[in-house]
Length: 75
Image 1 (tube, one colour):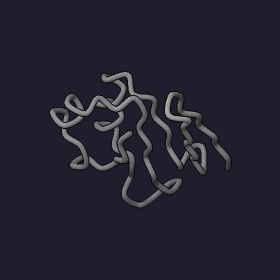
Image 2: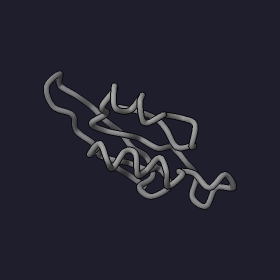
Image 3: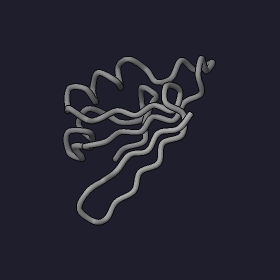
Image 4: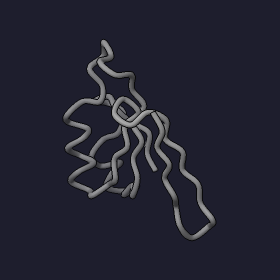
């Protein structure tokens, strides 16, 4: 899992090493910083990371039993 959003938050080289299966981007809707940046979204999509954004889905809760990860979303 990776928590990112700004242009300098995670380089392509870093993401290629980490290979996040899930990415959570915490940003307010219509925030003044324009997060998440499209550049970051494209980096994550290139790695097939499942992207969850608080500005789109609200609260993101992830739990695991040690084998599987479950994602619960609530606005």
